[in-house]
Image 1: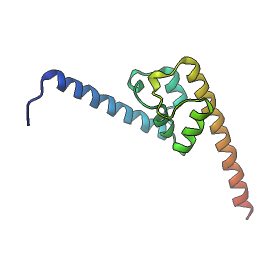
Image 2: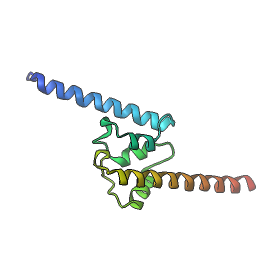
Image 3: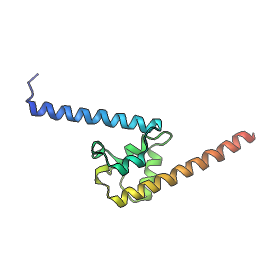
Image 4: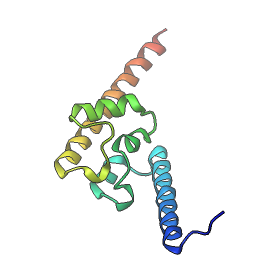
Amino acid sequence: MPSRNPQTMEALDRANAIRKERARIKTMVAKGEESVITLLRAKPDVLRNMRVAELICAQSKWGEHNARKVLNSVLLNFDKRCGELTDRQIKLICWAIEDREELMEQNRRHTDKYRNAS
């Protein structure tokens, strides 16, 4: 294997550290320890090149379908990166996430009501 120059190794180390930090953040989001809304508003540098949809999908009981619904409701492409968002777009996404969470909770209550009735 050819030896890599120090600059290449540094770049690989930085990329690996970013991947690890993103994975840690996604795990925290999935466990409910961190909020997507808080992260979007904080604009951490490590999420700059991460897709917004990937971050939304990391939430528990969320998936690609709900992420698409949120992004479509604010007229954003599914491949939009966190670092490309304007402050206005972040506000709109946060509102859309809150609305979607409320709708999902209403659907859960409705489903539970009919499950318990039978």
